[in-house]
Length: 69
Image (cartoon, rainbow, N blue to C red; front, side, top):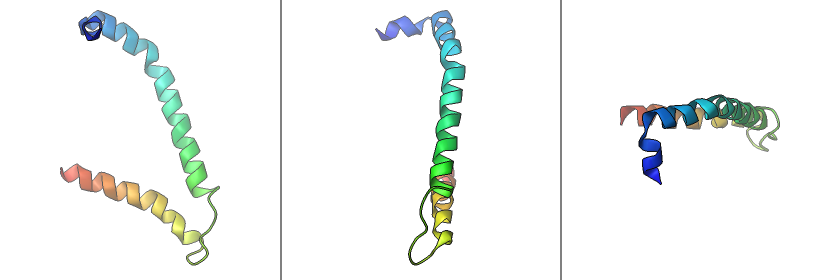
């Protein structure tokens, strides 16, 4: 089954066909995630609105840490 994709011409034809739908799906999911995490999430009872920085800070810290690996 995997040898079907070993042909570069066949793989590129399939990759070209699914590239833009995947880009649009990823962009839509990113936009939805940003909306739900920064706008639609409720404020914390102790920290208030400042707790939302964790939705940005923690993934950014993980990416920065993994950049050293």
